Length: 289
Image 1 (tube, rainbow, N blue to C red):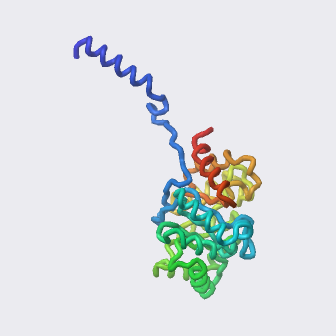
Image 2: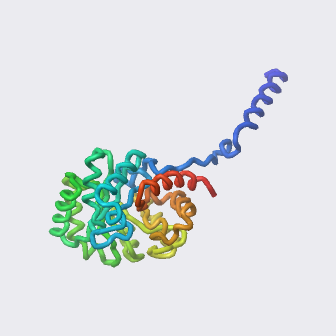
Image 3: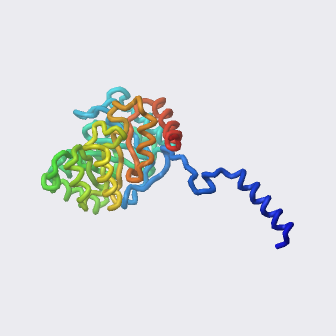
């Protein structure tokens, strides 16, 4: 190359470099994460939106804040509005009483375009089979994507729930469900879930403050990382510490969005304005330090 051509090329390249953000040149460009990003839950092959629509805020005795305050049509409207924004993951439970609300939402949304998660307190095989039949009737569907054993606290839950577990495994083989797993509410239960080959998906309490969690944050993160390495899908819950961390919303969102061991997370919204605000705050929080 002639000297004048070398100089011309160098100057030209320098001009391009000066206009290119340093982060991009170094490969550090941050990309926003959105509520409607599609992610795969572990090795299940089930693709969901990053955000799940929670229906169980203060959920007990077959009722929740969502079912009490919104009613069937109101919650169905919220779920279908979220679907219009690309949120295809619905988090329900028998304990919340939200199955009829999902059924109404399915009159407005194609069944095969949404992923439905529900939870059961069944212990033996007969209870589990009865629950699966009842749940499908209540929701108005032939199959349920994900069924979790709900609110496990004892470390010996695999022995206590062996009948229900076998029934869920058979239901998966028959196409009645697509995946099974657990919702843990103690460190002992979480540790056992991490070592269980049966668990495909775990619903875990996680937030930066350790509020209403199974143990200190580093302890829980270590277990979730182990689960994720072993191919389990991880769905975070209690992201705002059951409302105790509402004054730290952006911090909580930023924290969970930057955890590689959490695939998706569920948050209970109670009206469409809350949903719209959350959909806006998630991408902003994902890149703001």
